[in-house]
Image (cartoon, rainbow, N blue to C red; front, side, top):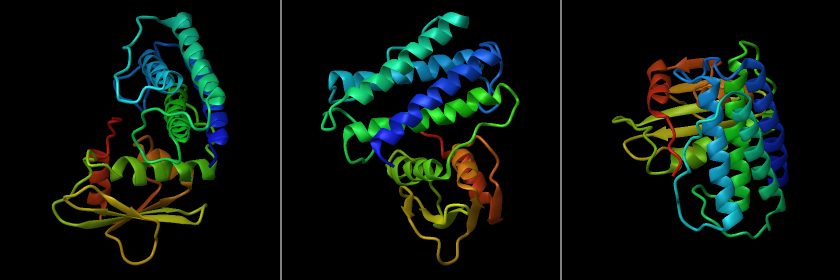
Length: 245
């Protein structure tokens, strides 16, 4: 996907997140994030949006932590979230394509990295906000879901800090049935190695529509279909949590 498409998705997903949060109310529980209510969700995503904006807007070349969570609540918190989301979209839209700043996953450019990362961050948390309404999450296009699966498997879990490890080497297959795409994840005592390949035997295969797999791999939904060794899928649930930097 192109950077402009990621920014457009970020814009729309942030608006949907705010709308769902406003409808649910900040006291509503977020089933997909146990222990959180909508208030926690808005504070977290709003902080992350501001954190990302600072790298691009100020050209920061090294990691720095976010500025912390606000004490706002209710309508003031929702307005604060919308303001930060709008600032992020505006910053990415107006940034030079060759802007230099810190990034933490491989990408064609820092701008491409931040646009993609924030589009997926906001989409997953939009689904969280919608879960507080106890309805069906809005649509996630298959192309975008595939892009997110690749960011997760080939980006986050290729890093040394991935906790997805196994004493015995094992193969996890992920197959998006509506997109004609598959990935094989080699899990061992080292960081996982993912190949864009669906051939050969695997210890466990997770398959289904790309959007369902995307949310399942982010531990938001059950796996749509599982064949083979279920303990490998359980290992994913246990150890696939992400740290950003």
